[in-house]
Length: 223
Image (cartoon, rainbow, N blue to C red):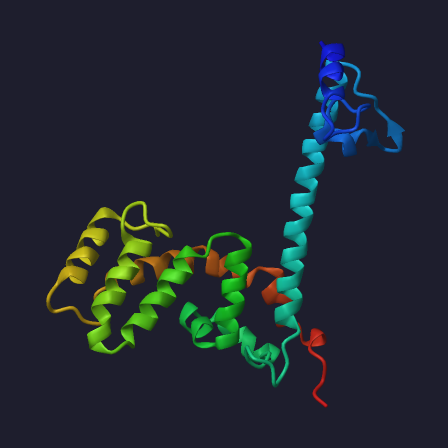
């Protein structure tokens, strides 16, 4: 079988004649040793190791992404676009309650970066979208309310948040009401905030991003 494959591949100009498995040609050298693909067992072994190497690359990429977030936020100083890096005592106030964290531009941005790292930012995105909605002009509310519902609240929405059926129904009724106002998402927002306060908010306060921020020795003295 391998011999017939070699013969067929020799007619193909797109690959080297000596390599019967072109997609794996870069995986034939492992730990400095040559592994000729001359049997089914060897080719299966090489494919398994290659998959492991791909997994390692993915893990390393995630670690590099986390480090970029870490350095980007901890390196903020005055005059940069996001905000001023807070003093440790100011950052410590974020532990008082969720609302205190969200009123800080730097704190809310750091919290969002933390959730992005965990691929669990839908709840915060919904919460922020509702906050923005509450401050819109009345004539623009209808379109934005419908968009928020379709993006976050509807069943199988692209960024569906975890809400009970009754809350979804009440929110839909509010959105479709002729008397639409800034309170259309109040119940849903309260429930999502409660979930964050019990879960991701607490994990954020225990994360390296936050703990390093409140260490006074990590904050260089102002010049």
